[in-house]
Length: 260
Ligand code: F6R
Image (cartoon, rainbow, N blue to C red):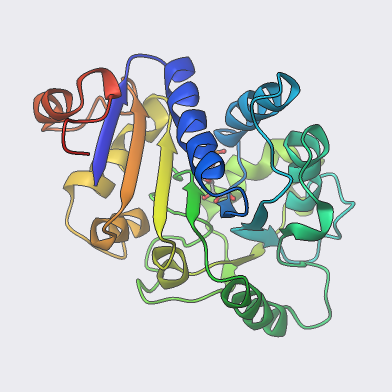
């Protein structure tokens, strides 16, 4: 894992946007794996701003999101379809027919999960997978004890995730209890991964992911097996790491090392 620690949240966003923009500049028809959640909002704002300035185009990009809530139609304000349209797609030149998310409102969500895997494979797999991290170490909605060999499927969300999602819904009962999520093995097939962790609330999860044992108790720790993963943390999210001096030594200020 390449660990880039930057002083502030703002610097982390710029660093992550630079990596996404470089990927798309090098490969305009890149397949991006996209995430949702609060962490991604400022990153998508930065990418949309670069688009408005004429420095970033998604016209050739194909995207696959990690997850969607079971039972929510794309026009539901709490759905990830809605989130992505508002946060990124409608603010850039992303082609709607090239933007894929699992459909949560289908009659057979299990079949949708299988079909979603097939769609990713047909597109040639993911070039760059964006990831956030849950406070419990989840990636996508692969909650603790998810199989590290899991594929796209339906997961029951934990109480911790339901609580984190509560602000986005009108009542406790409205918070979806299930999601279709890419599995951990599906995520690990991306050619490169970029995980962004911001703030003190992510410090324990970041430490477990990077320096803990690889374990289903911290699903993000499976990224230790991925050969091309970059983790960008602000100082607060990096505050519980043990080898911080080494990470700063290799990547001063979060910059690339001589041999990157
Ligand atoms: C959502 C997803 C989740 C989030 C994680 C962090 O698509 O993949 O794993 O990345 O729950 O969420 P925030 O950024 O809201 O803390």
